[in-house]
Length: 536
Image (cartoon, rainbow, N blue to C red):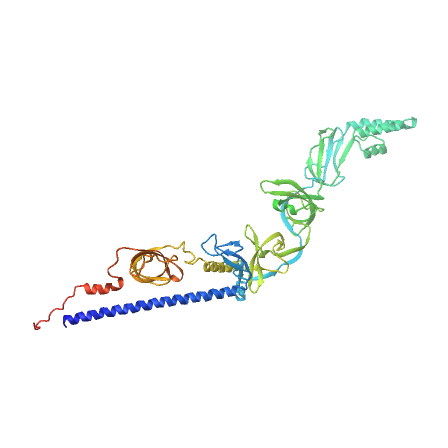
């Protein structure tokens, strides 16, 4: 093969490579423009369809999906994120606090509902307390005259006594003189002593004798120097201050007797619930020592003092104790029943979700829609909770599966927020820019084609690409064939936009697409070795 033939073959090969690359570049450029136009048309039709579908819906408010709690009355740019506010429609299941769940999923989640009803409510408060003596059922026995204790019938504290039982016998010297004087005047009444009888009787009263004891002296006609002290009430002797042989003075306390017909229970009522307990409220009491026995009573008083350690008030409960089964020191459980209120909104207690700062319920709106509603609750009794504000009669609330519904709403809310996150185009100011260098190959109305070198920030190698022109247009000193330095940033659909472009003075002698040919033409051409024995 001659050198002429070799040069011809190389020239032909280079020409074919150049023509092939040119055709490839033209095809890629047209294809990218076609895809861009189709994408734009699809987006336009999609946006118009979305607008058409939403045109019939009533807009409740606008909000930022990333900050859903803040509501706005008109559209605009979010003050929190670099994005437009999103409308919330009246029947939009993805609106704040709403979720739509298919019947099959509801069955899988085990969702049960109950109706909001009106009914009567008698709140019940349970408290514990200790049994104590009724301090209003107490009798003190004192010595009315100086004397000596000759006999004691009750010898130990807490001995039970009944009314009229003899407690002690005292010898009272002062009575002897008064009774002798009275008897002397009594025998002299026939000779004019009638006028003195009244004075003698009064003197016996002054030394402490009762009318009954005076009548005994009159009926017996002899001195009664001893006094028998009896119990004025039935109960137990809680204080015993005398012994046989003791000398007692007038006014000294001899016995203290506490009745057991009624007793007190000092119940500890939490300060937060004390407003529901009032004097006169009926109560029921139970004690572990008497299982199955219920004692009836009522609240006697609310003591005006709060225990600083337990933050409780004492409710003084008075219970009937006819058989004396309740004794001081026992523990008792008290059920307070307040006045019954009529026409109260009621829901099952399990339907109310306590978050710590508010109370919410899940309301079923039909067609698989659920919405979270804030409510104001009142008292709770017998697994029913009073609703003061937030619900109406006939609404249905979820009593089982609320947290699963909340999880479903959270997932859908996350999807909504992700779909509404700012795109690269809506976040141009926040998108990062990347620097590159290359040569301008062509300039169209909206695009510029640049064959650039590697861009390490994007992990790009050498290639020729189309970029969107900047919004302000190209500088006047940039033309096809210029070597330029430029900055780009990402926009929608994976495209990039030129932010700045500046020509540079050093123009590359060969562009990228001719590098292979240049290397081939400038490389050293080695001749094949002459075969041995060839003709010269």
